[in-house]
Length: 353
Image (cartoon, rainbow, N blue to C red; front, side):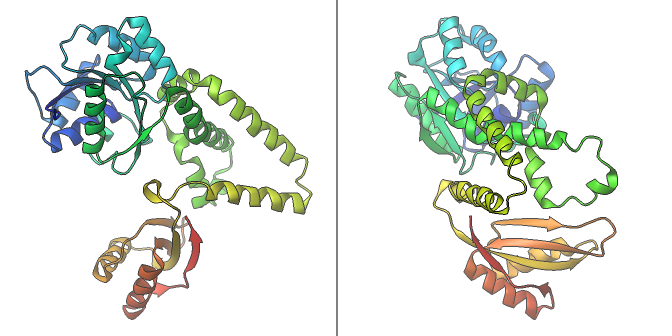
C-alpha cells in the first residue's frame, strides 16, 4: 500500500518538518500536540486535513513524553500501527511494553537530523534529505515496516537498519558526547573578557555551534542514554587528564593531534559516502553590503557547486575572508573566472573531507 494519511503526535521541529515534507509529496497529515498553540501553528504550516483513518501514527514527542503519547493514542483507530522518531531507542521500547502496545505494531526509528533551534517555527521540509534515518525492524509487522520505509524514502533520507541497543551506543558516540563536549567548552567562555571573545574565529564557532541546543530537550536525551554515554565520557576525561601531563612534550602533543586527524578521517563524506578531496579556495572581499551575494552570483555564472563555506571577519576589519569548499575541477574553474572579473582570489589548498 502507499501512504495516504499519517497522524503526527508532536508538533515540534521534527514532527512539523516530517508533516511539511509528507504534504509536499501528496500524503495527508494530521498534526496533534498536547500544547494546543503548537498544534495550531503546525497545522497552519502543514495545511493538510482529512477525516480518514491514518495509515500510521508517528510519535514525534520529546523522549519523556513518549509514554504519555502512546497511552493517549493507543485507542486511536489506525490501519498499520505506530512509529517513533526518538533519539534513544531502548527506553522507548520499554515504554511500549509498559503501555501494553504490541511490539509487532511499533516501529522504532530515528532520523539523524535536526537544528539548534527547535519548535514548529524552525521546521523545514528538506530537513531529512540525504540524512541517515535509523530503523529497528526486528519483530515488526512487515506491512508497517514497508510503510516506514516508504515514509523515509519520501522524505529523501537514507535508511539504516540497526538494532536499538547498538543504536543507543552509536548515537552516544556521534551525537550525545559531542553535545556534552561542545557545551563544556562553551561554558569556559562564561565571564571571559569581551576583548578576548572578539578574537574568536571559525574554529571556536564551529566547535561550540551545537552548544546552542535546547537545554530541556537535551536533559532528557542525555539522562535517557546515560548508560551508553558514561563509558565514553569517562574515557574522554581520562584522555584529557593524560594530555594535561604531556603539555610540555612536543612529541606527545604532535602524536595527540595526529591521532585526532586519524579520527576525523573516519567520518564519512557528504551524504554518508566515501570521503572526497576538496579544494578550499580563499577569497578576500571588502566589508560592504552585497559582496557575498555578488560572489554567489559569480559561482552561478561559472556553474560551480559550492560544497561548504566559512567566513572570517573581525569587528572593525575592512575586509573579510570567504573560503569556499569545491571539487578540484570547480575550484580551478572558479579561480580563473573570478580573477578575470577582478576578485581577490588566493591559491587553493586541498584536503580530504
